[in-house]
Image (tube, rainbow, N blue to C red; front, side, top):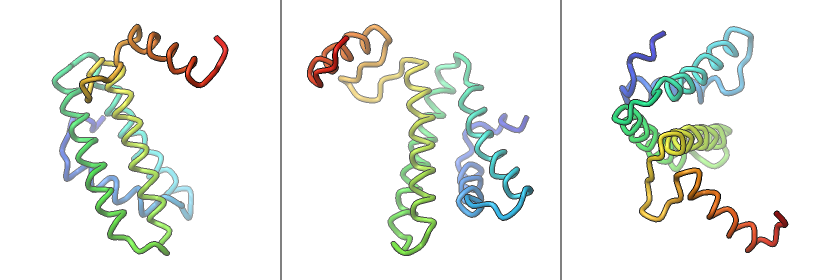
Length: 134
């Protein structure tokens, strides 16, 4: 599997450019390529398996890619369909980044509730504020 390339930003940007272009595939070949690109990012995320340094590096890469996509989004005219496609991939990367942060308990903010126990305590307070019953 070529995910040994890990966090090569130029390569990952290229994959995202192709994903944006193929977001609405015209045939089965394009649909397969798009699925493989998305799966590449998911397997890259799953392949960190306990390596904290690699996980932190990948989180940094995903953050950089989100920033780059945000700039692409801002440069794209509002009438172009790809604006929403770019927004989709910003969310996709954000979700992968958050999964890594939670799985490896890597807080990005000083007050972030990252461990399962911290979350349970925080969620109890949130549920009460939102008036959800336990």
